[in-house]
Length: 342
Ligand SMILES: [Zn+2]
Image (cartoon, rainbow, N blue to C red):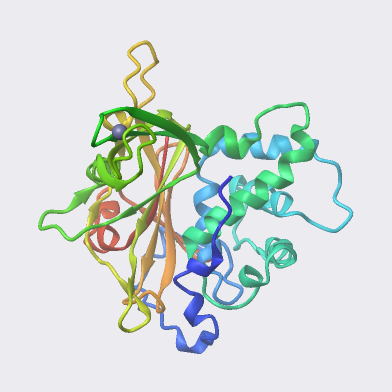
């Protein structure tokens, strides 16, 4: 799995920012009949963690396999693992008897043992946390997957992209395959709203690169990218924090992206006529970053239950959400992570 480069964190230059400096959006009055305190408690700037964990608990097949794997792991002698703590939250999330928020303290403690960055009290980037938490969970699953079985993380999230370079001089083609766990895409300025499908096509388009050909020594080539083994769960990350070199900070990009319930990744997959039609993905959840800049904001999540209904999670507060609300202008301008599954 690709290791995360913490130095690229949009939050890095602001790690000393105190909790008080962070401002949160004004919460609109909730309808008591559709609102419940059944989300995850905020332990102090942990909205990024809560939103990501809510997203993970919305992928039923992954959750089941994760909990089954965890039950086969030997007891940890150093206290709860990240895997164990997440499985505990998954179990609590599925309980219909619950009427109070979930306390994520055990997860927080397990995270603190792995990373002082994510174990502290500063706001962090939800996408970076997502990547690193998958990394830890995959590692924690290893003792139960020693028989060569694919662990739940690789089984659901890992996919391969083939890059094929064509020399501009002699047209000779060379290729290589690279594993991915998610796709991080820019949201370029455009008049009409983007869709995830259009962003993917844009991301995978053929591009010109510098590459020296061993045959003719030409220094330029064009490269095409295509998914060769689609994942069961496709995670899309919108790069909304754009480096501002002059000010040595990050600007937030608010360009809207339409949140479609279905996604066809066929156009960015290698053509395999004999392969089953695996390209129709359904939306399972999103994480939005609500806030005016990269350093000021709050993460919230919307997830789909097994019965197809949607819930909006703002830390401990859970409220019903319609598919129409899912398309709100605010979500389209703030959507940061989107999870699609087969
Ligand atoms: Zn060449």
